[in-house]
Image (tube, rainbow, N blue to C red; front, top):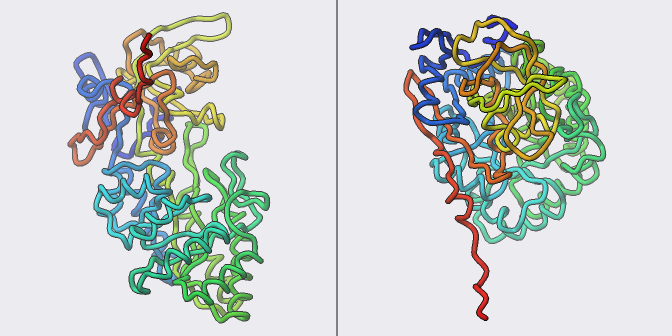
Length: 447
């Protein structure tokens, strides 16, 4: 283990600064030790500069490699709160919301209707009603949903209707964990080619504002090659639709899912530009070969915008030595980050104080919850750490808090946003009263 090997996993503003008892890890010029003292642990810290840089890389890459119109959508499922939605609005991004809960967050942030895009594989009537009122684009997952949408849109003036995109099931998944694949033929997401043709005919017959095709093949992949066959299928379909109906998609969205490095052994990770350049070149070449006009290319990243920006800070409690391993028991884990239990995700870490200390052997970080699977990381070279020390886990910005829970009565951690050296509390820490806020006691029994 070396500081130099792991520091590149942290936000772009990460540094080591002098502290009261030696060197300390800092993000955006703010000591993580001082932030932990102020806001408690577990603590999640988001660095805006890292998110801004990722957006800039997408924009530069699209400008360099795609001659048509383009745009970026923040996939809210990776991390969404009012502050994140505000940031998306300030950056001029579209915001992907799934269901009326995420739409409520977008509304609280004041996100423009035109910038809101709604996904969902089984949208409820309430979800669809909220989407029709609040969204600029609704991505239609299936034919029955389209029928329900048509009934909702009929009484609405054409100028007030959201645009519709159809989600194509391309039959090709990317190379990732099976639970993160979405494009395979037996996926629960989207429609096959014949269903898409039916959907387009229905939209034309009902004068619905159909403007795009969308597909998604999986999350956290590192090789864009499987997007090629999916794009070919979608453009074959677009060509067939144009011949049969005269309709062409004004927008093609190949989803998102580009991966990031979670562990030093995954560095260097292929850059965002490699992904964008591949998609842009294949889309342009395929359209040119078919004589189709270039559609708007809408990218939909989530993880690659926010994962590296987030750092989780934990405090070590008990330190145990079993016959097989050294355990560092921390005050968070499964409840705020279920990814290791779900996907076998592999993380790295650094001590906050004197992070350049040499390792004293392998250690495993486990949380306080009543599950043997509550292990955040295993067999990582770490120095000798004592109870009370702080440990920072990088690349904690995506799919942690959004997939977290109150398991074992866990209170969700505080979240702090760092920008220009300033720290802003954007989500307060839950307390036990929050855990019973929705509960309604049974009537007391009268003897």
